[in-house]
Image (cartoon, rainbow over all chains, first blue to last red; front, side, top):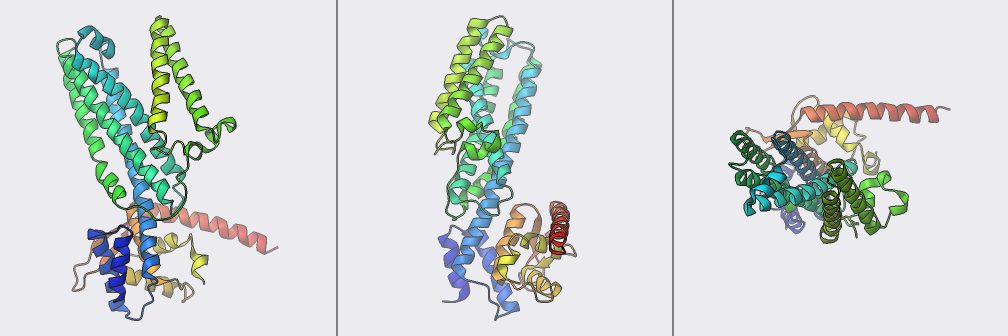
Length: 284
Length: 104
């Protein structure tokens, strides 16, 4: 078996196939033509190096792209809310439309999941930016966070568009047009990140190691008392969210509604941590 | 110089070699050897994963050459130029600090 044939087999074994593998083999073939006695190294070690270095770079790029796409989509949604003539969700309730209520729920829940998953993807990518290679488990977490963020962001855009459609006749027509255009632009921004996500999902590092958890993401920002206690951190965060939402209700002269929404938001926060925490590498 | 000693500096060396213009993989490795007077003697194959990684990071771009031989030619991107400048500054600070300690 020739060196190139062995290398081809090793590349396939670590998940490098198709055009990427053909390109690597063409480059090595050219090198050997230039210098037939060249010592290119152990094919197995080289294939692992390709997988580790490329897998790390692709996972990090997917996370950054997802973060950027979500930030842009978030700006579009923000513009939609800011230009609304009155409280959009209150209008949905008044309109009494099941479609509008579904849209509002999708926008609210999707938006929160997208914010957390996308933010944590960007944070982990930023904190690991100096690392040439990350462990396979850590790369998997990066890609999962990016994928969940993009998926939840898409749900938000759909919910936002449904809300706009349900409110036709209840709000100014220009706002409906603007919101549908903003939802479309936001969805486009999210779709543009999917090639990077697919590339990262196809090729992963092979290096051993742990995925890390929330303490690793937050580093010094994580209070010392809560390090290594992810559920305690989740409970503290959920309580803080509930309090902020409840206080907003007090400011809006509707404390009972604020308290109810605070309770629901806090419970949603805890439920999200319970359902997605392990999958997104927030707890081990 | 052993390959271990080059760990962490390979990216900067590749970016530095490509500053003068586009090159294919074999030529990059030859330039590394020539410019270092043969001191940089790393396993040749290990340069290729680094080239692919730098391209994935947006610091390099590559195309197939139009010549008779099918070759992947790499060039520095604007991001790569900025990264090279940053690496040069870091290296300069590092060398000054080590010199200051060793000279005493």
